[in-house]
Image (tube, rainbow, N blue to C red; front, side, top):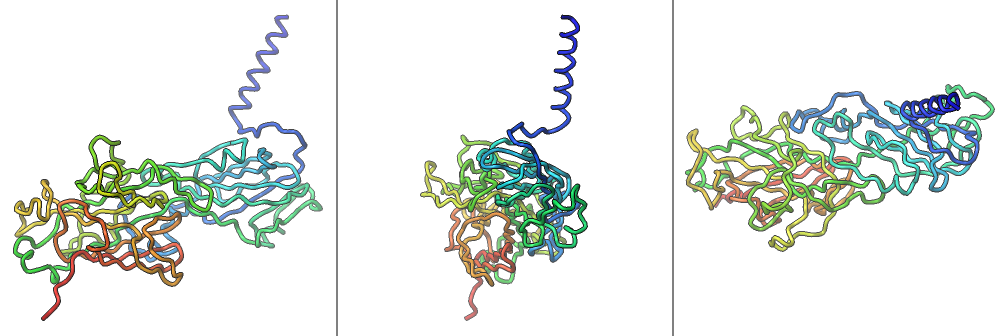
Length: 423
């Protein structure tokens, strides 16, 4: 009896060790007689990023984006038969090979940089959500592909390879080697986040009204923050927007309740959405250049709630706000409180992200929504003093032009204040 107990304890210990050293796919009926290898793009091994950084490289504000935004730190692949998991594989690369599964009709789900792990139900996996990426995106931006169906054949199956790459693969049984219908190209992964950047902010001092030139000659102490950014995002589906639990970077004055969180009683600010004070360029009246551009990774926001200027129904549309202090002859101006500045001496310039305009060449209309895998590059031209709060955020005070250089890049040019017309 004692020997039996000892053997039982050893067996349990070995079983626990096995569970702790590998991610076992839950046992299901049927023999695993097939495997699948998958290759994806994009892939890069670049370092992480800061929230303020150099966007001067042409790729940084066009389709390629920054290298680290395409980095695949971890790739996960799930294979399902119906709703039941039949295979799971992971790798720290843009390719996962020899995932054991079962021949027959299957659904494949691929995700990068999410760190999800084994989930036994397809329905549960497709309901997964993720929060805003951490500072510096050291673990990479989360990327997904929509689930796709395949017929796995007995033996080795390959998806996402060119003919040459497929032919170079060595299968256990060369007669059981299948190149799945993949267009002979790697599976594209799409970022679930968007990026909002203030790539330039310039004071057009020659256009500043003469009355304002009497009271200020430059802006300093620049800060930038985001508002109405949903905390979580779905990973799959035509729309990823949860439109809930809206975050803000810092509590700035908003009597018209232009953001969720304008009241002190609500949740604390999210430091991921706040940048400042910024180190200014050396050129006078250049507040932000593409070498010191503040940028933020955000989740989709398609909320239709524009607010009614009450605490019960604040606006939920995403905005990015620059604030700065007016100076005259090197000293901060203290005489503009209530007219142009708040009690702390700041004047505000809010921008409703992706508001209005026509995007070219795709013809997409700037609709005030923020979508996944899209760069929103805002260029701000300031023709005068702003306001003592971030209100109101509407078209009446903005001249906005939206241009899309590529399907995933939106450039938004915003002019604050109307230049005087010569007589």
